[in-house]
Length: 202
Image (cartoon, rainbow, N blue to C red; front, side, top):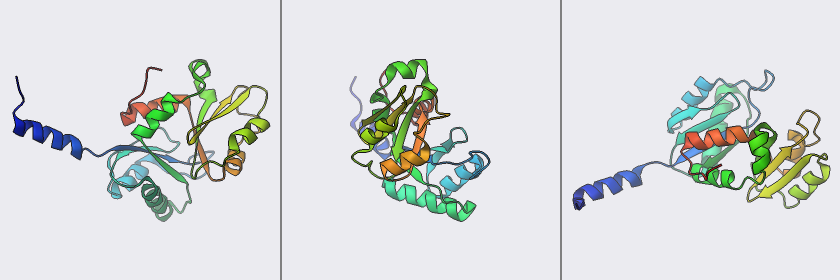
């Protein structure tokens, strides 16, 4: 049975009008009582920016939303809104669901992710990562730590745990050349699920 052309046109138009899904990552909030940003207020703030279907995941600053526009402009908009509302200067990174799919597919530590998902971290930089960042970080890494760059992302496996690592957030920032925010493998997968990102079997 053939679909009526008018119905087909309406279906395609509806599909085209769906806004793409994005993930905003806030750096360093709600850690040790510092940089407190309540999730309810954060959702309200993002809705006020004109974003749709806003939801948050855990307290570490993960916002999922639908919108149209440039990622850099979205980052600037939410950073400015947070500063106005909370008086905090918080770096924000925005990635599309499509980009997130590539991160999941590009994980260079699949076995470690399966066995120790909280020790595998996706590290994303505010600005393009410095050329020698991977080499420099691996040179500073402990015996059981591994650092690999895949596209615009750094992946870090903290094989001995992160408690005494020299690959601290401040060091990642300095070597990468701009603020870096990290998410462990469990969170990466959950954000992919919530964003409706297309991912391979993992």
